[in-house]
Amino acid sequence: FSVLEYSLLTDRGKTIVRKYLDTTDKRLKFNARRAWTELMQSMTKSVKARYKKTKLLQFIVTARFGDNIQNMSAETFVLAYLEKLRQLDDLTPLGERIPESVRLTMLQNAVDPVEALRQVKTNADSLGQENDFEEYVNLLEKAAQTYDEVRGVRKPSRRSVHQHSFDHE
Image (cartoon, rainbow, N blue to C red):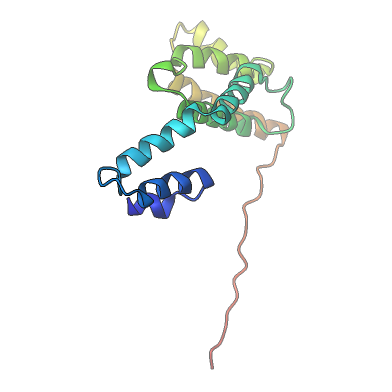
């Protein structure tokens, strides 16, 4: 319970923790399991969660790199697409998640406008290979990096930390 009290910093999280902290019911006082369950239900079944799921799904279904998404590198697009899938999984019960075969098709469609990225699927098809989602993602990431290098897309520069030295004499 102390971990929840320390870790949950959102207004919703704090409210739920306080509910189980301030109760006079001995069965509920400091009941971390119930607090966690209530928080998860709030995160996945609230109106806000449904709205976020809708927005994530809209991106996943409609995003087309090189078509309606042009302001990022290919590698960044692939990673962003995978992150949107992960976020959607966080909001979706296990039995309702998008199957890997559908994920594969949707990601292939998302990179289809760019020949160099479409080539990953084409090569697998011509060789008669059935790539699973993870294999396809690995190949696609490599193709995206190569595509970016050929186009001269520079990776974002790393942040630098300025270091200062102080003498305490």
